Length: 337
View (spheres, helix red, strand yellow):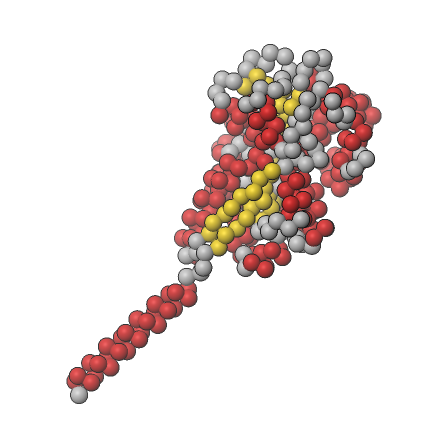
């Protein structure tokens, strides 16, 4: 009798342990992989952020997450998603590129920009000049760029969001002095002094910093700081009298996330960019954080810059149609050598 009771106790105990193990196995979510399709100069930012997010997500959910990155000119990256690249999230350089994905594929909800704070832009930047140490050509403002003998490095606005921000910053400066006609005339001179158009901002940075081509690089602010840090004593940053508020947006790719079962983690990934830790990583990589407290802590590294806003020119849909569409202003003014 005792032996029979003991055997039943052991069997029940073993069964309970087995059920506990099975329940534990069911509770552990399977590993997941996200693809973040981003624009050129965000490599270092997302490398740092991905590691922190993956660690936090594992601690909160028990799930292992791996974030893969794809980088290139923002317009080119958007086209890759339109043509079938399976992005879980996109972190691109201008809202028009995410709009293009939404409109041409239906993969992203039309209201994507209202789903996260600040029109789904967790950080901002602006456009500055990177020159060689000592500024040998004496470049101080936009007017100096079109002096004879000055070579300008900037990417192709057909494929690069940074190039479009560069273009519109220059346009805004010239338009304030003489209206749209003066802006077009100025840009015609500027692009006549551009020896090569790379497809993305990082390519232009390499052309300037490593190939040694050009006297001035029109650059994202964060890219200019990075170039200085990687080559101490070789470059100076010049802040023009007027630049532009650059707002790189982010979005999860609804239909891909739903198909792959990654919607929850994709949303958490992008929302985490607005957290204190996310905003700190943003600031550490020379993007301007949206959070006022974090910006106050890092504000000394960000110079005060007078800025226009893309809304001053009618917003990206209008700007894209006028300036960068086939047959638009850029096509008319740029004459490759």
